Figure 1 (cartoon, helix red, strand yellow):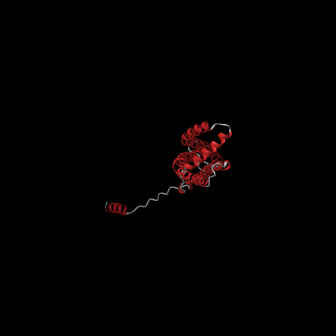
Figure 2 (cartoon, one colour):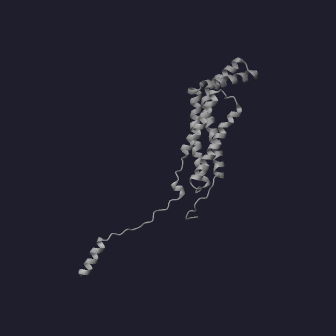
Figure 3 (cartoon, helix red, strand yellow):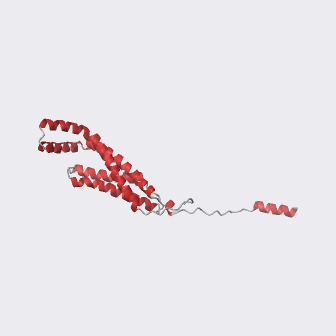
Length: 197
């Protein structure tokens, strides 16, 4: 029995080290994924800077420049989707990539809607006045009387801010959705199969 007691004491004094292998991290887990909120803010900032430049230099009537914000939005959303898929090492589905881009789109649409309202009422109200003058000239050239033009412009000025805001939001959502579709289609996608696939 003394021998058995010695063995028990020796075992209790011994220290055991259990080596548990560390879970293997995938590259996608190691990479920090940029959120759609951050990308939406970046795209919005670029669009606002462009809008400020156009307004300062009084280029609102240049129709060619009117297309530029839409190109910026589509390009920005495609970049957001490609960047997302790359940061996830392609372990994404079409729906995930589209959803990422559309979240950024929704934020951009909301911010740009607020920008339109602020710029027309607080920041650059003179831009609305210039637009009204252009409308006045066009209406007079069409043969409308001064009285008719004045009434139309009063109504137009009242509706300019709410209508401009609503139209901007809808337009940005539609164009951003197109950008999200394109980005999701061209992004590298190689999702890891699930146990049920």
